[in-house]
Length: 500
Ligand code: HEC
Ligand code: HEC
Ligand code: HEC
Ligand code: HEC
Ligand code: HEC
Ligand code: HEC
Image (cartoon, rainbow, N blue to C red; front, side, top):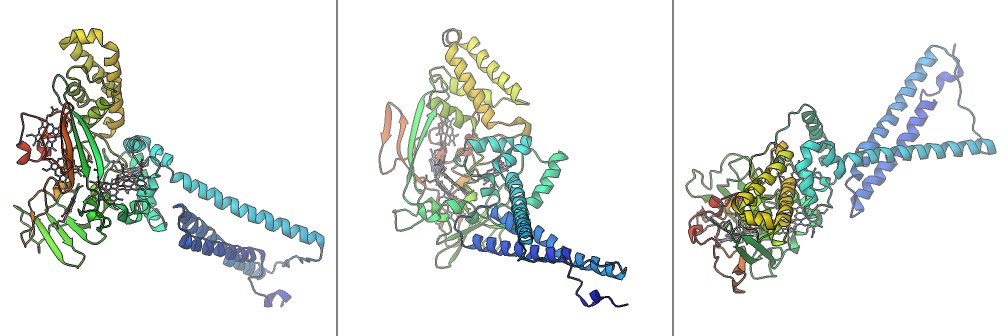
């Protein structure tokens, strides 16, 4: 009964041999890519996809082939089928040689192509176009704002996913649910923030921005127009103390002091959007802890509110680095400053802002509404201006419509109001969430709200009567009627970004 085959291993068959060679090749490829990712400085975030997703799939397929071949072989022998032996390849035979090289060549090419193809497919799913356009209606606000941001050339994935397989997988798992929610129309409008599993800033922002680089001050120029008939201009020039990166440079600790280089700041917020922060802990370079608790709350150093204790990072201030929906006050001031809205039109500041904050269901309605509101106003109140300045009024109206298109997305219920911006303190609590002068430590120290710890005003006023002083001026509020009210109130109590 014994055939000469029965003492040979079941693994000696074509399928298993291909599986074996294939898995060796893929394994070597994976080792190479892992080494590349480890040593190369500037790896493409997509490399991880081949290393950890594409190649392993091939490896698994090849590995499975090995036992599959053996099982097949076994059942074939059990059924006493005449067995075929391997063809004899003789490398001294030029014909065999030619065939072998061709087969290896084609096989390698095929393998490389399929890896490359899969890679490109994945790359596409990660591209800015894919992120912004495939779910077009949902992402339109972020996609539009992104193109006007300083990060317009930074791919979505560089902030939202970063390098390596872990976050790639996490985001794809989440992505599958998001895909479902888009198809089933279950997503929330607007999309809720903060994004809880956003990757820590050290692994995204700090890949490009080096925390230690921050020192000294940068100048900010703010041009405002009041809501009176003359659209009275007002200018504030200030130095923002952005230092803190390298303490020896610059006399002040500066804003980027928070950047965890020597000290750490932890906080607990009591609301979803992290706008109310009654409890803050500072850990100094010597490891000393100091807890600041907001007056008038039930919390204490030993009793923080329930909820996530967050280590402060870039995103706690720069939470809108790329999707900044601007307020009507801000955008109209800007457009007037560079002349896209004619500032000689009486009350144009007030009326343009008013036309933007109207209630509109969609963009077409808004564009009609803005035109009707502004044309109606000048026809009725300033017929002479309407007659003589038709062209410039028309250009101004187009600018206002443009502002609307870039910053308002009624279908997604998105505008500046939905996403508080944590930089500054004019319309949102921002820095004053902690720097309100009411956060006290057991030692009686408060988180400062002195107007000159974060910036100095170097000049301010109407163009014909500017006050200036390099060492910093006391703030002069532009509106005469409310004069010193800002000393006892928060700016945001009056400033909403829309009409006041
Ligand atoms: C410079 C970094 C950066 C880039 C580039 C970037 N984002 Fe964001 N994105 C953020 C941050 C930070 C948030 C806010 C997170 C928070 O508040 O929790 C955010 C929030 C979002 C949100 C939630 C809604 C909102 O408006 O806050 C969406 C949707 C989004 N991004 C989509 C995109 C898309 C699509 C792209 C590419 C076209 C992109 N992002 C590019 C940093 C970035
Ligand atoms: C891929 C590189 C890259 C990443 C990642 C990145 N940035 Fe930037 N960022 C830049 C570049 C380049 C500029 C300068 C753009 C310019 O000057 O027009 C910039 C500018 C800025 C500015 C100054 C904006 C201004 O108005 O001048 C801030 C603030 C900033 N980034 C914050 C962040 C934060 C926060 C993150 C993480 C969420 C981040 N960046 C992630 C490359 C990056
Ligand atoms: C405490 C809040 C806070 C934190 C935390 C913070 N920043 Fe800033 N950053 C500011 C403010 C305020 C400015 C001044 C410019 C402005 O008002 O937009 C600024 C300015 C910048 C600028 C422009 C600087 C220049 O020279 O023009 C960059 C870039 C920047 N930050 C990046 C970062 C990055 C990256 C991180 C995280 C490592 C970070 N910031 C953390 C508040 C913060
Ligand atoms: C989560 C709470 C929190 C937020 C939000 C916050 N800070 Fe701070 N900040 C602190 C704490 C705590 C200190 C240390 C105070 C101390 O020890 O006296 C500090 C210190 C500073 C200092 C150093 C002051 C000094 O003593 O020289 C500056 C400058 C500063 N912050 C700027 C800002 C700016 C600008 C923003 C908004 C963009 C901001 N901070 C938002 C908690 C916060
Ligand atoms: C904790 C830091 C901090 C403190 C304290 C602070 N500011 Fe500011 N302030 C900022 C930052 C950051 C901005 C920049 C906002 C931006 O980049 O548009 C700002 C912006 C401003 C602006 C320009 C507003 C705009 O956005 O057009 C004025 C005016 C101003 N501050 C006045 C004051 C006055 C008055 C006080 C004292 C009551 C004060 N600030 C206290 C951080 C601070
Ligand atoms: C009691 C209400 C009130 C408070 C509090 C207040 N403001 Fe104002 N502010 C006004 C009014 C009213 C105007 C005039 C608006 C106009 O004419 O369009 C104004 C105008 C301004 C303007 C110029 C107008 C513009 O286009 O934005 C700036 C800048 C400003 N305030 C900054 C601040 C800052 C910074 C704070 C906080 C330190 C503050 N204000 C607190 C009521 C207030």
